[in-house]
Amino acid sequence: MHPKIESPQYAKMSRATAMSLGLVGGRMYRGAVNRCVNLLVHYPEGCSANCAYCGLAWKRPGTYQEKSFIHVDWPVYAMTEVVRAVNSAPSYVKRTCISMITNGKCRQDTLEMTRVLKSGTSLPISLLISPTIIGRQDLQAMKEAGAEKVGIAIDLATPELFDKYRGRGVSGPHTWEKYWQVINDALGLFGPPHVGAHLMVGMGETEKEMVSLMQVLWNMGVANHLFAFFAEEGSLMAERPQPPWPAYLRVQLARYLIEEGLGSFDSMGFDAEGRLVHFGVEADLLASIISLGTPFMTTGCIGPDGQVACNRPFGNCLPDDIQWNYPYPPNEEELSLIRSHIFRIG
Image (cartoon, rainbow, N blue to C red; front, side, top):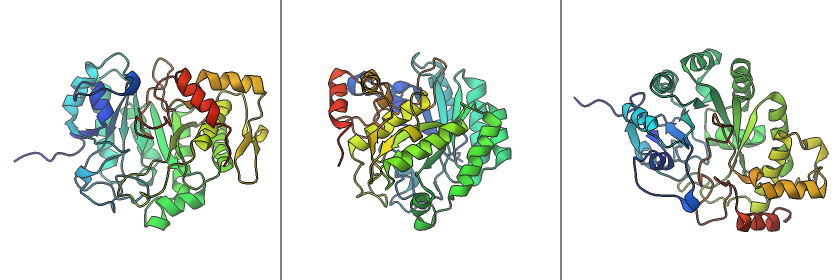
C-alpha cells in the first residue's frame, strides 16, 4: 500500500526554492537567487478558505495539486529530501519557512515539520501561520518545536476590505478580530522583532490607510512585509489590475522611513484621495534614501547575516515586467525608473 503523499511527510516547495537547492534546473533574471527555503503544507483536499485573490482558494477551479500559488508551481518533495537538499544548499540560503493553509490537520503537522527541520538542519525557521485555526497554545508549541519567527498574512489594510475578500464577502472563515488576537499572542510569545505581517497593496485601500496600518504595526513591534497585488488566474479577483507602480513605490518608501526611524505617519502628508504627497523628510535626504535602492527591495524575515532572507524573487510580477519587489539591489537603470515614477500622482 502506497503512503499518502501529504504533510507532514511531504511538503510543497516553491519553484524558485527548488532551483536554488539544485532540485530543478533554471536560472533567474539578473542572477537573482532565492535566499529562503519556502515550503507549503500539502494535502490532497487543500485549503478550506476562499480568499478572493489566492491561488489556493477552495473555489478556484482545479484540484489542489494543480493549483499554483503566487503564480508558480509548487512541486511536492519528501521532507527527507528537503533536509538533504537544505544541508547541501548554497551559502546564500539563510532561512527556512513553512507556510500553513487553513486545514485543521495543519496544526500538528506544521509542528512535526518544524521539528524535522530543527533536528535535521542548522538554518533558522520561520512559520507563516493560519490564525483562524490556531490559539496561544499552538504558538507556544511552535516556539518549543524550534520556530524562531512567525508571520501573519493580514494582507488587507482595513477590517472592511478584510471581511469583503477573506471573510463573509467570499463565504470564508477568516475574521479581522481573530487575526489581531493572534498577532498580539505571537508578540507575547516570540517578541519583537520576531513577528511579521504580510500586507498587500492594491486591494482597494488608500495609501494613507496602508501607511497608517504599517505605523500601528511597527509601534507594536511587528515588521511589515510588503507585497503588490498580482491577480492569480482563475481566482475571484483574476480581472483586477495591479496597483499603479508609483503608489506601491510610495508605500515602500514610507515603510522604510518608518522602520528606519527616519519618518512617521504623523509627519507625512496625504491629498484628498489619500495619496502620499509629502514624506516629512528634507528633499536632499529623501533623494539619498531613494538612491540607496533598499526601500524598494523585498521585505521579509531576515537571515543570520541581518539581510532579508525571504526575498521571494519576482513574487509580485513576471521577470520581464517592472520589478515590484526587487530581489537584489536595483541598478542605476532601475533606480532611474524609480525616480521617474515615484512622485507621479494619478
